[in-house]
Length: 165
Image (cartoon, rainbow, N blue to C red; front, side):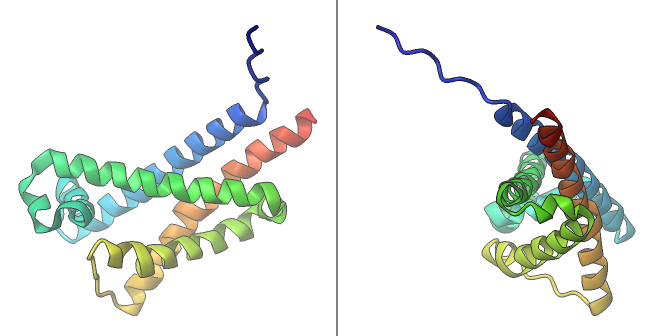
């Protein structure tokens, strides 16, 4: 006797689509802003991505060319994917996250910024020293280009779910 395959729920494809779109949109917006800010400081995109990869390779990242740049880009999108996944999972239990997506997204952006600055960067042995204006600018960027798109995209897919029920 063979067991019947488990029934596919519409929630799984919707979750995959929500996470893929949220990761793509927030990831592209955030890395694009980084490219602009790096460019203003005379740092090219490859060098900037190698800076991200110093968490893996240390200073040797700058000797690894496109390999470390690609890893830096992959790490960037992985971090955005994790952020989107956490928001998505939380929104399944805390409906106000999608009901108040703009406020929740902006607040989530602050949380992502604080986590990146206080946990991820120190673990990667990256210790940037920023002025108050740079911190404010960076926090606003993460609020608007990461937290907000994630929340709005998750809300869009949550609203699809409600309409289909």
